[in-house]
Length: 263
Image 1 (cartoon, one colour):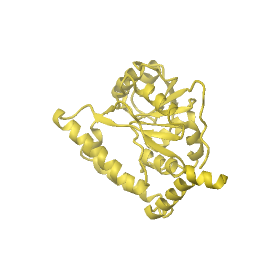
Image 2: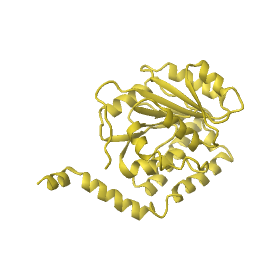
Image 3: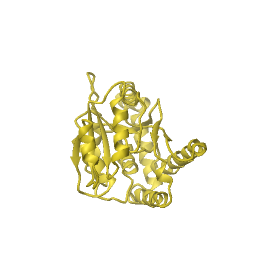
């Protein structure tokens, strides 16, 4: 397993937000980030060729704006990760509303789990029919975790609430499908990070997000991209092959195996 860089002193955090024509929701997201109990060291907004004033709103809020001309979230997110100066990279979307303790919870989670390269957080809907928000979020995110978990052999990552070590990104950045706008960047990242490192659940608060992924048309596109995000990794990551490699990696990393080698 590749070595993770774990800092023992102050650890800088970078929040990355890819955006395209989402100015009003981006402004709300940035206000929530400004209200964090532990503020991030930097916020990077990646402008994916917006035609509205998303970039201007980001600059006014004190974010660093990076331009990405290549269409698609995979390219925009990767551009933000490349640009990040923090040792911890936190990712959310423009339509997200983090709890005031989000950044603090991420920092605490990494400091108490040096073996973990990435965390997947929970989420809930902030709009749509109030009575349906909780059950639909449970169904949507539960189905996502169950279906992708079978393909991955471990936890997936969720783009609206994820965080990872920059040293882990450096290991996989040349292998992710950043030029393919028809893959889910978070699922693609999970394939690559999970092959070499540990992904865990982020404890703490849930991320607020829009119900937009479930709207007519958007949901169908997400399903299509989900299948593509899985099959683009075949045949090397066809589930039985991938599972065997993961089991072998975990056995090799177990304390008993290490003790046996030492003996």
